[in-house]
Image (tube, rainbow, N blue to C red):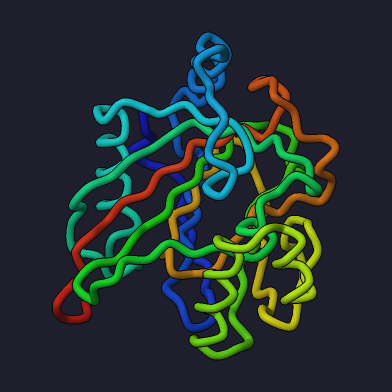
Length: 236
């Protein structure tokens, strides 16, 4: 299913491991949107704080196919040793900005709480309309303590309380702010796979939320995966 000879580039992110961009990732990319359409009724609303849209869990056997791609093209760049566990889903981003949970008003990160592990995040764009948006990357402008409080409040407070405390309005992150500096945007492209360190703050690059759709053939359909990995004990 995955192309053994894709086009690969490594885009630097300040203070983080590179973002690995893999074009022509699938040999037959049209199969996944067709699968999503066939199982459209099985998509379920994700918990609002987790993902702003619909999701369909993928089988472990499919997720395991990503391990080879990660090993061949991203493991070294991310300083990982081996995949310990993983999960993937087809995801349709559908939520309008006004309905977003506060956790999506700010860039997100995925992290472990042990220095011996890291998390790799993979996202495969499965839509032809590139204006539906790629991925933004951000760097923090504030201390670790302030970041921890911001993330805690985004998860714990109501939208109104979070907005009042931090002067942040409901919207997808798209530019620099008092808390984050925008580093770069990786544009969307049909059959493009991004793999990056989950510790890098990131957000979907949604310029026009009104164009998001629940139809897998027209909406912002992606394959998303999280791979928990052991870290290399020494640098390559």
